[in-house]
Amino acid sequence: MNNECIFCKIIKGELPSYKVYEDNKILAFLDINPINKGHVLVLPKEHYEDTLKTPDELLSSMAVIVKKISKAVMSATGARACNIGINNGAESGQIIFHTHWHIIPRFADDGYELWQGKDSVYKDREAEKIKEKIITFSKNN
Ligand code: 5GP
Ligand code: ZN
Image 1 (cartoon, rainbow, N blue to C red):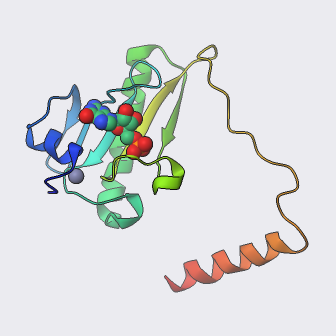
Image 2 (cartoon, protein in one colour):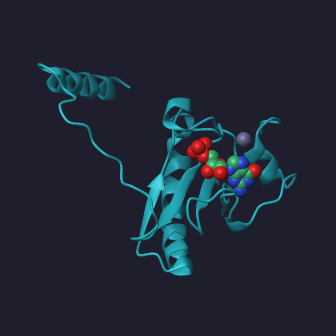
């Protein structure tokens, strides 16, 4: 638990939330500023700063619950699609530094644009070099 963390306060019951799922390790509740109605956050009860700092076993449990709750969110809202999103670090848009995964029901006319890829991002042999760095790091860590 982190005394400064809003999500820890929700977990402890010191702040209110619309809970949709709870077990001994995981909690899920409605996002207070939803992207669409039914936007849910799934999080571990134990405080970790972000997904990459969360133990593998806990992440595995979260993935199973995210799948289950995503189906429930889609059923409850009539959505035929959803985004499952994770922000890691401030530059990615993370504002609450307690691991959480977003489930966002999506509709054809909801007004959001899809991410746009950029043209010509890789110069020279950059793609090959980055590919090699990723492979090397993931083999060793
Ligand atoms: P992040 O950008 O860190 O991935 O997303 C944090 C999310 O937490 C945001 O979508 C924001 O609306 C939500 N949020 C922030 N404070 C509260 C709160 O007090 N209660 C609830 N239910 N959601 C919150
Ligand atoms: Zn916390």
